[in-house]
Image 1 (cartoon, helix red, strand yellow):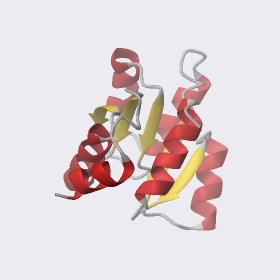
Image 2 (image 1 turned 60 degrees about the horizontal axis):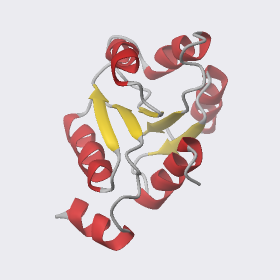
Image 3 (image 1 turned 120 degrees about the vertical axis):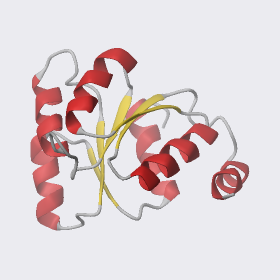
Image 4 (image 1 turned 90 degrees about the horizontal axis):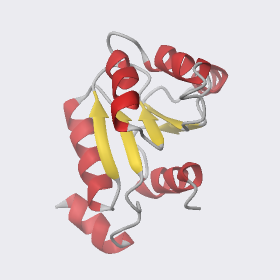
Length: 138
């Protein structure tokens, strides 16, 4: 299985139990990310829409959020703006993971307050490097 192969290749415990909230509406992508990161030692919770992101931030207390931009109910940019406007959540790093690989998409995400911009399909090493950088494990 792919998750086990990457875990074996990269070593387990890379996540150091860092709490990661994965905001992704696609079931396959959501499963792949949460399974892979879980195998690498991250403590993952998932949200399927932007409103659920706002709810789970309070209950789960993520150290990092991996945010898709194209979410239902409340899109990723709107959710990011609300999180960054709130003193209780503004310091949580938000890493965009999107299929929108345009320069304007990256600019719009950064303007909304996203801390990093990664495109799908993402290279695992790039995602891990970003997660480490923003969780303080770098």
